[in-house]
Image: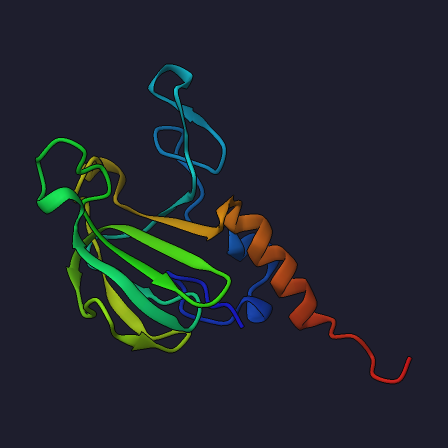
Length: 162
């Protein structure tokens, strides 16, 4: 089961248009867009929300990292700001630009568990408050496509014995 990190509900309960909640204002990112003059691919999707919006674990797993990227806001390379990396045996999810965390490294989480609150730390702009959300299976995968695939499977489970 996967849970939308902002809506906090299972993928199968979300209409297709709701999976894209937030989307992009054009100033922030969608999966695969290039940045820095084409040198870097945006490896996630930016889910627009308000400051302090709750952020939920998309899947069960162990918190692998929680805290400031590279030691603190404002330091070089602190693009994700306050962030969480959550992993299970096949999937790592990343939640970045948070303003407050409720989890720490080593915590075991369930899908849908509250992990923190949205902000604009790192390289996020306060005019476009969002949670940068990634899904990695080795390489990054498009979170929107992943949610659509899971939601479709949950809405239309295979018929047993057919």
